[in-house]
Image 1 (cartoon, one colour):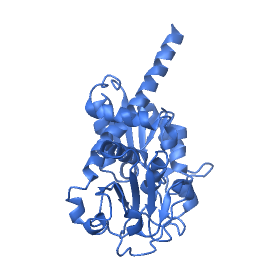
Image 2 (cartoon, helix red, strand yellow; image 1 turned 60 degrees about the vertical axis):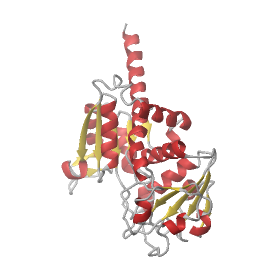
Image 3 (cartoon, rainbow, N blue to C red; image 1 turned 135 degrees about the horizontal axis):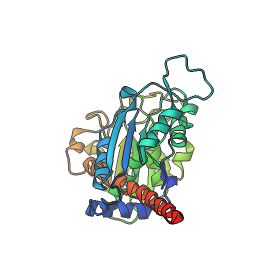
Image 4 (cartoon, one colour; image 1 turned 30 degrees about the vertical axis):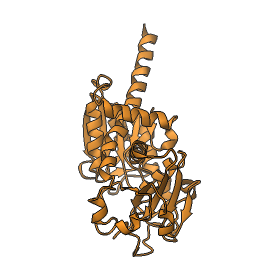
Length: 327
């Protein structure tokens, strides 16, 4: 695997989930794979779970890890070609990404959407250019439109805990004080659409996701109706896609509570974190037996460890091929 940016980069989802669960059982079984290999983690935005889980997974695989918060520690990047850099940008992404590729065997890269220009965000310009110019395998640590490692961890969590072969999974919008990207919701929907689940998305009108991410999901604007009989409920805020980046409603009545939980099939409640208590999710749920947020966070390690193993296996395989050619 040379690129992990979406579910579309995965040839066999079930095999990847199985590999992650195997890594969870024997975390150090493949630590020889990463010996003398370096993982670079490049962040243009804040991180807690993504940074720590990816570092831990890399260490479990025997890798060395370098971390750079490029928004604070690096030079201001220019991403456009053909410009005269006589403004505030100091280094072009061509050289910056190329240099990082010289130092690292695999790179994890994170950048958020600006929520100003939809076409620009959904083009994934900065992520694609980084992939193009670094010259080594790249793992998305979240981009403007997707968060694949989170979605893989979410799928692992559901597969571990489901009590029926085809559970009902509901993605529900939640209130927030500021506009948030659609990345987590997009990605979760994209992965759920690849699995044989009963998948429902519920949100106030005006918050429909891009059609390519909604896919075959059932969309219901009445949250109570959507929650009926749910086995898993994924709570997440996102800003409007149609009125891009806008908050259209205060979301009164949309916070997930125990009263709403009673409408479900004793559902496990999920959230990617960080979560605003008392706004997105009630304390009673987060502190109660139905909360799966720590399960998800734990599975972030095994999700990225499975992806890193696939990348390392390919690197080593290509290296062996080169050695054979030189003999």
